[in-house]
Image (cartoon, rainbow, N blue to C red; front, side, top):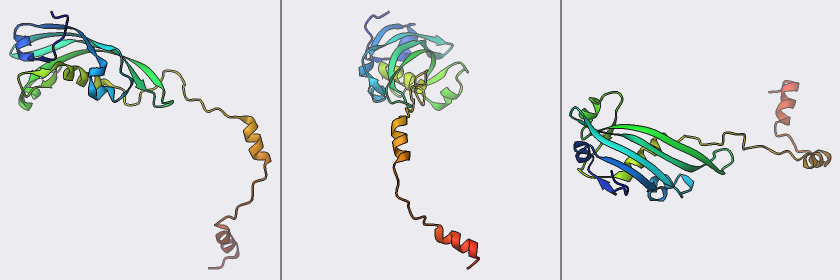
Length: 175
């Protein structure tokens, strides 16, 4: 077990030696994710176990973080707790991905080594809510009765109805 997480990993080698990675990744280092956050401080807790299921190398574990997304109602920060269990089968081809057991999602690798943060970031991005919002009613339309009364009391100039001519034609029956 490593207390400090490596930047790049060889997932098949880690599966062969039954490796374990535990530690934290700064949220600010997850470039694609930080573009969607209001605050990029904090870290992601990572607890991953690599092993083999028959001939299939796999990654299992848990990823946890507190993320600050933008509420789509009031546009303020909303705290979102991310806590997901992952089960990935490491594959290099589409055919291998199609043969994976139901409980494993494919982790497609093209090279021997991959960035650990890309696995973490992909899992978080796949699970982000489409429309994050507060659990309570955060967007309340305030009606100022004084302003409304003033608007009603003020004389508004009468506007000419552009369809008045059509109404007259309909009444008279002229074509």
